[in-house]
Length: 412
Length: 120
Image: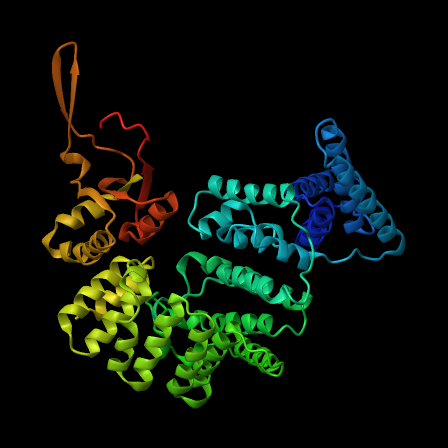
């Protein structure tokens, strides 16, 4: 057996099957951490066995059997004290049967990843750990990588993730797809967690959140997966359309030497027509379903911006209307600041400023987008001293070098 | 909770801050950062430090005082300033560290104060 072929097969199994295997094991053991350990041992065993014995005919079934064996070992080891042991054993038996069945029929096992997504964004799970939990369990990203995207130390992220898994196990949170009456709020939490991984800020000021840049591809992957598991869900279509529209502009956000380019000055020739077309098709499909929501509205705003590629102009009045809807649906700080920016374009700086200055000062003390827009509008209103002070705040709150340079150059 | 943000500069960073030609470039980014911290009401103390070559080290050994120049360090990045901030969590301290202009060139170290402060 060629060792390279074996490690390629293991890599491919890790990429294609990890989250499905984990979701299957976790759904039955109701213990995400134990399922992860068992699966990790199974992959280790594969690293030893496959180069020696050859890649099995059904790698997934092989991994499932190995993980099951490991879960039985753990269950027997813990039997004296753990009340969960019978559940683990029953689950391991079921996994074994399915693995055998799969091996026999060359069939595959049920995809339980939707349940895993809902568990990660369960109301009992702390909001700040939902996205990291999703990235780890559904995409298999390691804690260190997730930690740097969320600006915490790897050890602390590891602890938060394991606390969340302990909670899922000890509180016996059900791995299930919520019923129709419960679905909208539960789905909203899943969508929020995926969007947090994408990390798009207010597109006009600082582009996407510099911390999360590395996760945008992963977030789009999660968005695609969710839509595959919940076909025809309008808000899932809206979220994917939104992320694709933002992603289409990735290359246009910086000049060749790395300088920041605001949305209104971006060269539309550098926007990706493929991403925009896909986003438009999704948004069109979503709009046919008659269930408007926050992510469809956000995607619609980006869609109007995208039309500049065809028409050469931006229809600010349409964008302002979508923002009205958005602020009614989800009056987040980002939406309030975004609306003020758009109203300033559509109806003048004075109108924009009166919306912006109505946001409570306490809420925006450290909110960079607010200060960047305040600086820009006050400059347009010729209130130079106030504008300079706002630029200072905006520059001081920047995390992104290119945006800092852009604001320093614009400061009067 | 007090956290100290320690700013590490390279040699160019030290000379650039004192050179009248390039000073403004530093002030243009450092002053806003300091202003943002102050407006958020989190600053306890802080200051910029001159290059390590300007330092004096003092030790008292067996009743005798020894003063030495230096150090003249070999590592690339050296402590060039600090700000003590009062924020509720390490996450909040790291948020402020990420906004620091030196984060893109040098390094920011974030240290929590020990809980039982022997100095106070």
